[in-house]
Length: 298
Image (cartoon, rainbow, N blue to C red):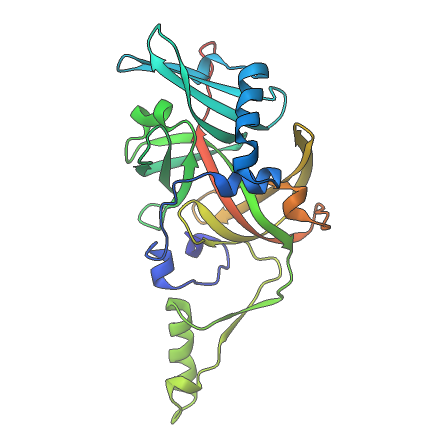
């Protein structure tokens, strides 16, 4: 993924191939980053609030294989919501099956590669193609069981992409030292050619200037990424009484439109840092996406 962005330092080949990552099937980290609270202590209250005060939309209701599904979300007027997925027999009683953070994203045209359904069902991690033949982008899909029939490999859809910051700060590094990977190996070969009689142990790190760079690299788990970008705009919203900032970033790619990605960041994650338009930021994020919501009237 990261090799396709403009002026990107190269991570290791194992990282790019996803060999060091796992499909972590849990939402505790996301709820913790969003609320700043222990998820186990607040989940029942969040679910109760959604079921009592939340609402749904026609595009969040569907039937499949004799089952009926309804996604309820709250608050109704904010881009960051708590959502409860209800499921049951058609025309029968519906019961809660999962509670998820639901983030409103920005539209990006992406080609489906594969899906990794979670073991407990209903949710999945999905990979999409930014550039054919290159490393995919993975994101968590909270509406997988609605989108499942459309997620055919090779088919392009408009996805709503958003991300939640697990960590975010004003960018500190002016340069990055690279000591492995294909880019470093090319640098090392050139350096050794210019320094006959020296060994590979003598090759210094490759220094890459970071000012103005747009970088996105795979994180510890699928759907998680390390990134550096320029804040193009900042909005504010709230989940109940918890204020959130939305940082708008974009990542350029050769031969296609830039990926537009809003980053939701809570005060718990930001601490004393106040992001502003024009700041360069380093962030560790969890990406969420779903096929664009198209109401029946549209």
